[in-house]
Length: 160
Image (tube, rainbow, N blue to C red; front, side, top):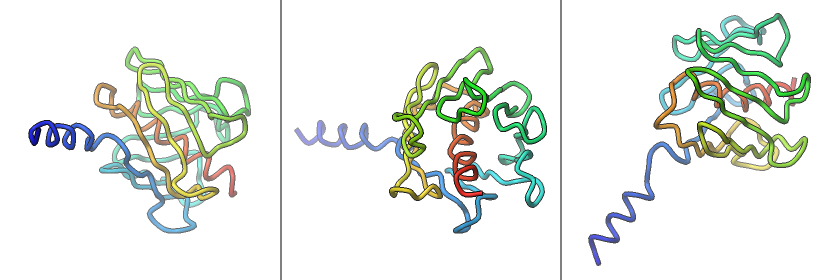
């Protein structure tokens, strides 16, 4: 019986689940931390150019937040122009869909396709801290970055 309890505790405590994405400084949307990943704008007040560790994240066109490139292989785009409720990520032969659970409710997201999970704000209407439940063991790092980048853009859009 004791072995079963230990196995259950170990199985339920997986480091890839339940991590927080959060701003580094309160009221500053330009720097974010998630586990070993650090997102930040390249230049002050330039929201089109970001870095995640050494990976470049940029809009495909200036001030067009519907289309992003993460590194050299991954694209992140809205399914419909100027509709930030639903996103599609493609790269490395994978396709991931991310959509709000309820229309125009940017606090809760569902992740489907070649990655599964969900994202939600830790506290209601507080877009500076997110709980990320993502089964990301099998996906490339740049795909994971693209998933994590959506709450960052939502936070900035909501409060700019």
